[in-house]
Length: 307
Image 1: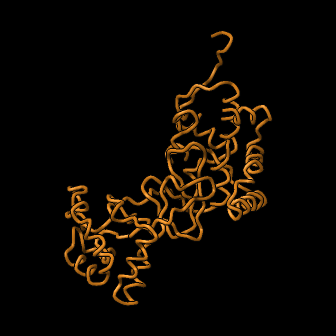
Image 2 (image 1 turned 90 degrees about the vertical axis):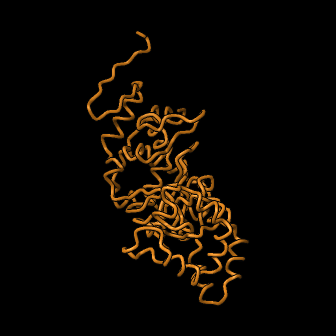
Image 3 (image 1 turned 180 degrees about the vertical axis):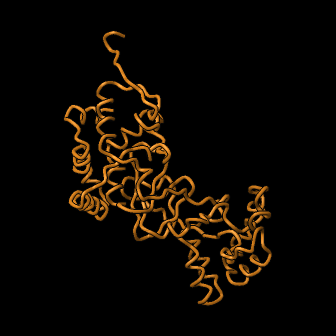
């Protein structure tokens, strides 16, 4: 105890965590210069919840079959707009993703009358119009009606129709169509992906971040210092030998440095190079820049790398 003990002063804002002297120094440096992510102009949302993935998530081959079964070009065009590419948690990796050619039948509550505020429960009118306007999709889902109707019985058929997804992001669905950062919670390393063109939806095992400074922020989020900090300072804990739970209510406490124009441009250039080449060849350079932003010493950097 005398040889290895260290003194640590807690204040009212600290979570109760015991740190070594070098960890105290690292934490102090981070919190001296940064602003917690919860105070940034960003929003964090969960992915969609189907309640029955077998019905709503289809392969590229099945998507083509549904489109080929449309009765005319008008139905085909509307149906095509309804089927969106989707990522699972396992598809997301650092800066990018490995899309498995999976597609989501994006069916909100009361579709296609989802913006009719007068509808408050399962609507026979909405179902009739859905069947008339989207017969190919309707017939596909009809195969799964028993399973869909047996989902959450307190909701299905009461709050929404049997053919609708369980959660569709009613208050933020448009954010899926914006540039965004996508991540999952259970990770072995920082695994934040950037999506600007595909407009991916993600399952409830994933989350999205929209707002300002996204390309700058993803460099911070994917850095070794960020992963280390969430694991040791901000509640991420440990999963197995190396993993953590990357829950946003944990990592939004991380103090991130507001960039100058020069720093933002430099970091975003590195991120662009990484995304375009679909490789992580700039990781060490990005890590070095992040360590420098937080003024870590070489001893502190080596400690982060080892832990």
